[in-house]
Length: 310
Image (cartoon, rainbow, N blue to C red; front, side, top):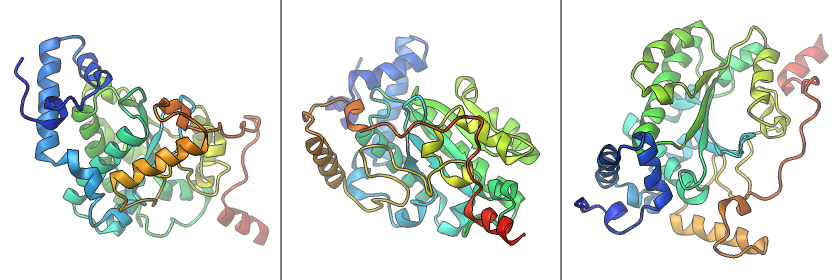
């Protein structure tokens, strides 16, 4: 078939494993897969995706870096893209800026973490203001003030990210978790899920429970407690970045592709790995083993202070 004049296809920038994802997304239908790949190539030109890494995450990158960021791998080895929709309004970014930032983060994952080039990703929707209520704490600074506002922010953000992933990064989503979920989120998601591809909507899990402990135990089936932040029942004070690559929360908002590739090369050299080492070689040492599953981690610091005062 005729190749459209787009760098991603015309200049052989697309790797075979990436093209295979489009074929799998269309269940082996070669014609449908080619049409999907062409639409993606045209989208890359229209949105300036091939230059987005050189240009950075945009003027709102510093603020949005606390809303959408990469974090440590799940138990299956998939890098985690964390979304904190409750902080979106405080970031002061327009919808177009959010869209650009999402694409920038996905391309960073593609280039630096191998997402779509042999690895999948996990999306974690962290409704931290709702989790704070479970623990009996005040909402984190900058998060949504009310449950209704948080739900109104969470679902459009999730749908925007999932739509972008399913249309342009097919077969890279391992799972998407929404933590925690109440009846408002469940009801709203039932309507939103109808707009998604059925195979994609099946990968979305809504974690609910009557207590924080019930929600945390569900998270433990997906994540090692050692890499989860304390407000999600983990043992880390903050979210941890993916192993071996410094692109965690709030990190590197304005760095260029050349800077990030240089840092990756330094990581390889420090670990005495060959330049062509696979992505698994850059992950570094595994986190420490989790504590026995029956032991719950200590509550977040704010709740500990309240208990001490009592």
